[in-house]
Image (tube, rainbow, N blue to C red):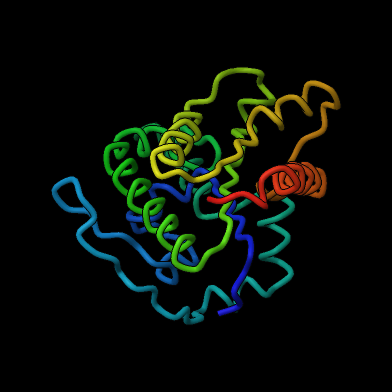
Amino acid sequence: RFAPDIVVIVLVHNDFHESFRPQASRYTSSFLKLRIANGVVSGEIAPAPYSENWKDTLRQTALARYFYYRWRVSPGTVTAGIVRLLGVGEAGRFEANVDVAAVHAALAAVRVATDYAFRRLKGLAERHNFCLLLVMDGVRGAIYQESGGATLELNQLAAEMAARHGLALVDLHPIFAADWAQRRERFEFAADGHWNRQAHQIAAETVQAWLHQHAGRSN
């Protein structure tokens, strides 16, 4: 509609399995989902309009925001606390906002979904004649611990599929890691896992450098 010259898509680690697996969170029904059957994408499930409910009213209260942002109290943290307290099971290990075991178990479907999505993106870029750049988030928790992250497998998968379909991809993991080694400043807000100002600045400079070098070339 707007005939863009350049489209930049930022990928984060929960984008992969949530593209086909329903999630019990606020906006999940409001995004397109893929239907996967017998190892292939058999169709697309159209997004549904978001409708407010009693939870939205609760979120507007100062008390709810205080517990959620100051004390990080959410349904997920409460459930995990009960599981640990009662000893009825183990809470999942989370890294980069995904349950590592759940994603690993669904890795075959993740590959199918990523392959399909990247092929569709390549087709859009060709039909509408725009330069497409994919930017993959780093596994920030692993960077702080200076260890290999389990979800780095998704970074590798994204790079593999991008190469398969001739798409440009910039992986921010080594770029964030180099910045952390030098400045020791985190990349997200204390009360929220999303990028803070520094992370946005690094990502923006990285994209700008790539565009200066490649934007004039064909996809």
